[in-house]
Length: 226
Image (cartoon, rainbow, N blue to C red; front, side, top):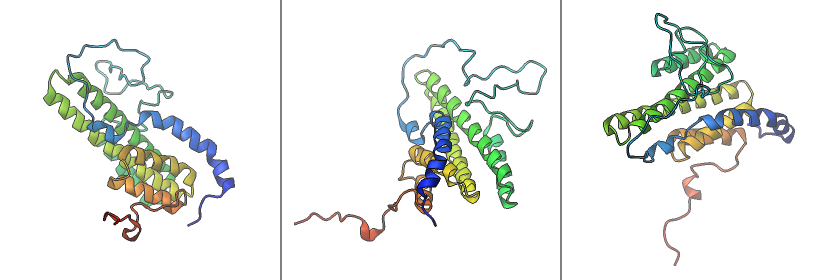
């Protein structure tokens, strides 16, 4: 294990900054789903046609999705006709394809599949959360169901993000792995299993110098000092 050198961090600063800016605003932390959604009557809001979160209708008689704006970061751009479906199954299929690519050490393909998978799950999470908010106070059973789906999708998104960070490590590109690992910790919190795994990766990379959880011998005693 070799810690980052100053020259390597400076060289990677641009990539890290771009990665953080491009993804941080899109990821809703898992911990935030525990918060109460606003209650009370909900009214329909006008839809902004330029809003990248809006799914445009598919023309009747067509089984293919509309062309997607590549500049809209919240919109999934499928690489194949059947692998970019906006569903849990579509995201899991992409992750399975990434696993196969990793097994054959085809890391470039694995990166592409995992990036698409985390976009699928993130978009699903956002849409389910929007539905939960719309039905809160109108039909709480539907609201609770959509909130659970949003949480499940966010968990899968963070899992895909963690796998993507591992692939970047295998590519000897820690400057790309670090921002992803930090995002996972922010989303999951350090006390959750995936958050602790992400922090352990940062520790192995030398990006942080204090282990967590701390060894039992280093933990402060709970007994009062007399």
